[in-house]
Amino acid sequence: MLFPTTGFLVFFTVVFLVHWSMVDRPRWDKLFLLGASWFFYGCWDPRFLALLLWSAGNSWAAGALIDRRHDEAGRRTIVAVSVALHLATLGLFKYYGFFSEELLALGRAAGVALPLPLLEIVLPVGVSFFTFQGISYVVDVKRRDVAAAGGPLDVFLYISFFPHLVAGPIVRAAHFLPQLAGRVPRDRVPLVMAILLVLGGLFKKTIVAGTLATDLVDPVFRDPTAHGAADLWLAVYGYAVQIYCDFSAYSDIAIGVAALLGFHFPRNFDQPYRARSLAEFWRRWHISLSSFLRDYLYKPLGGSRRGPRRTMVNLMIVMLLGGLWHGAAWTFVLWGALHGAALVAERACGDGRAAPGGWRGRLRAALVFHVVCAGWVLFRSPSLAVAGDVFAGLFAGGAGIARATPWLAALVLLGIALHWLPADWLLRLERAVARWPIWALGVAAGLTLVCLDAAGPDGVAPFIYFRF
Image (tube, rainbow, N blue to C red; front, top):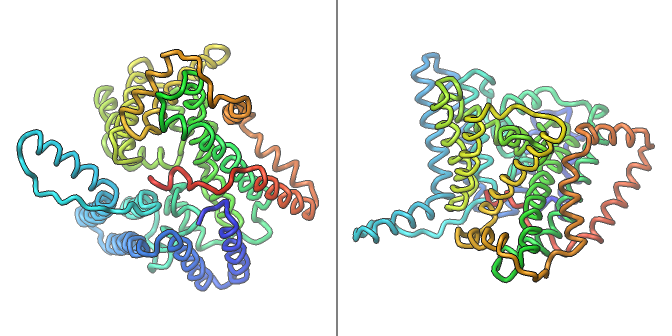
């Protein structure tokens, strides 16, 4: 069930009405939201509901056991077992095929027949996201950042809640669980901001990301050797805009939908292409994942506390694993390696936090943007060979222009221009729209939906991050 569909609109309307009619009976309301979330996930493939239940059950049981133990050694053991089970589950579904194929290839090269069966394993939607949320709950209970839930219902709802279930943002237990105890009153729901986020997300997904994917990015990356340099350059910039608009659209819609139900999710994107360093880029891009890797991997490895050399090693480890998290392919590993090397280079030249103003700042932002775009070529390419063809074609000349139309160029420029609006532009828009009467807001929202449906391409492609 995709957000920009009539099916989801019907589903959410029912959830919205029933939820607010039951909000004064918290236990029944939570049971309803949990059932609705399971229905939402089951629409993708009901077989994987068992996997979702397993992940949530593992997290709840581990949290309960940790809460009963007072010795640190015992608490650490429970965390280690729970996290290992989470990672083993993720590894089986996401990485078994990749690593088994690579090991078999190494065995053949060495003349050794390895007894590894090749299994056709379907990747469940959202497995990386709900696995990370399960891990964060267990670790946070161990660290005493959040109290263990008294029963399984809150933990199951936290991990299964449908707005963030399949593509984030990764919501921390310490942020979400207290909201189950103290609900936002109906009259304090940020209605205008929620509607703006949902409509803005639909625009970015259906008009910008959808059009760029269908008319530019997919055809060029399918066969880069058949396109000239102009098409390739526009496709590279186009994918940078597409992945931002696609993923930030999902996050915006998820945040808006949760807000309409009285829940607050953290911001997940903050104009990342205006960053003047790679470190700043990662503080602005997929903020929930960046902060997760920082708090649950980088800092436990030692962070920057053990000297410059160890800091650089830690950065490379985090970015390589971050690349592998995105997909089981060498293209993702090299994408992570590129970002890790760039972060290490920034550390060697300074700490990457300086933000010069004026033309120097704009030059720095342009340089960072192009490093990010080089990484997106690896990220988008189905193989290293295709990535090599794209890089070669960018500088090979060629006069053929088959895809670089003014309309597509305008969408690319629009996607980049969004990053250079004033940081508080959405808050300003909210204050302006909040002065409208409620009927005018409803009419404007309805007309916007009709226009988006008419202007968008036929059908809705799944969000890019569904496969991660």
